[in-house]
Image (cartoon, rainbow over all chains, first blue to last red; front, side, top):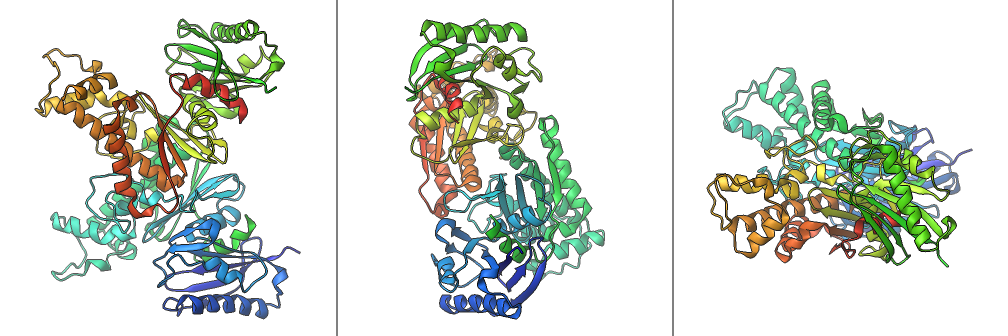
Length: 319
Length: 319
């Protein structure tokens, strides 16, 4: 019998731990919401306890489990298992998180970027099944990505490769991204940019059907707000979806030119914008790529749903 | 004794064939200039004859040679050894060039993109020695590149990966690149763009010290012209060097975010612009990258000189 997989998804709101089988199905799951403010040592204790609780509840010994994969947003040095910086937790600057958890287990513990984990989950259990290589992009508040070449994650020297979201696609854009630069893909086309984009169009005098009072708090403009606006026939919301789709399509084209991959998988919350968004992404991509595609390239939507984070983390020991 | 390497560089002006040792030194070389107009079969005959002539002249039997590497500009399907399109030769559309040459030899024949060949030469014999991975960029009339990951060229499914020159870095630029798009790195920052950039600045009313008569033929503006202008204190020439350096630096930053590589090597004719150019490239890169570099990243100039093409081609059998 194949050994069970264990994943930990360290989010900014919830800490999910799950046991997963080799088809990517969740066997059991445990979620807590009070991990963010914990100091490093108590956090490590909590994570280890959650894992052990799941093992016990499912009558598993450690040796029944292949390994423990952990995904967390932020910069991390993969080879050392060290969190360099993360915005999901307080502290944890240059913290050796992998080894801290490893000290409580005999089976291998792997720590990777959350987008890498999701990409590898999608590759093993989702839209990537049957391919050798793929690029995964997740478009939500930010834009994360994972690069898979010949069945393995490509991470670069530190482990920070795949940051397509921070590549500059228009150096004369005005919004400053959290990375500190202007004109990166994230500042043009993800959830983080929506308040700015909406406000800009209002200030340009464009008409909206949304209820924008003088003291309107633009930080409330998120993917859901824009989707509601689009459904109500709001022209600004539609424009923002199309603008974002344009930049995403351009980003996909850049990925194509650099990686010439057989597959690009798109995931993340903004895909709930639906067909208009996906069609604009693809239309832009093909307008740029035209006659430069010589072998099949599939652009598809991710197949793993809400639990992509923890299922992806659980897939890491399969690498 | 190690077997000799043999390289063929199929250029748009000259066809170079060389025997190369394992330190990247040329043992013997043969250059002809009348290959471009030949039909496919006569071209194949000529290439094969050149190789055999060099073998004979150096008293080599085929089995004394490791393999024959060939580099050619254009799109090619690496796994099949097929030229899809090339602007260096007439015809050769979907032509199985590798197999045609292979039919005249028993030792392996490898056909790759000229930038990939140069990159692999630089990796084995030049600035890449001692590294596991690197990105190579050559900036001349166009921008070519090669990606080396764990001692091997990364080519993508067709073999067209690494086209950083065609990634879009400013969708609102006005010059149409030969790829058919506006705003790609090549249209902002390589030899091909120089006539347009120079003309644009003249039309903006900027002052120049160059002798620009009413019937001036702007197609004469090339890297050498700009270098002479800069040396004469021409402000437009200086501005173009700095603008190009800015976009190159931005391109390097995008490469950093995507690949997180330990090394980027820059080659090609425009580097003869000198320190002002290289410094602007690096300055722009570090302004974008700031505190996001967590492990050493070296940005260096290629070490292989004029014969980079044929030495690179000769290195291909080492892969």
